[in-house]
Amino acid sequence: MRAIIILAILFAIGLIILMYKREDDIQKMLFSFFVLASILGLGMVGNVMRSVVVIFLSHLTALLFSYAGLLYYIFSEKKQWILWSLPFITLALYIFFAWIGNEHLAGLG
Image (tube, rainbow, N blue to C red; front, side, top):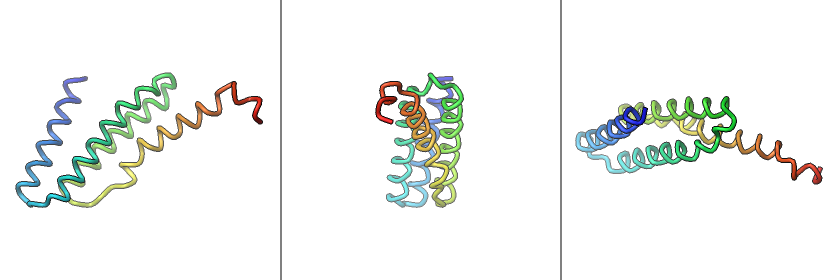
């Protein structure tokens, strides 16, 4: 599994560099690297959600959709904001459920 993840990262980096050399668009290259870095960061932060398996699996699915949105942007220059925001939504949902489930907040309500 780790090998596939590393190959996917290297594949995306290679595509970003290849499309930069072809189109000579530095803004698109930097934005693509930013999106890739945010996807990787959210993947690392998402390991916190392992306690709630359903949300963790939906977060992994959202990361795959975000990666597909990145590849789509690399080839067609159409930004997929909804796909890129899905991991943020699953992370916010986990934080919301963790906030509701905390027993030390029961005295506040």
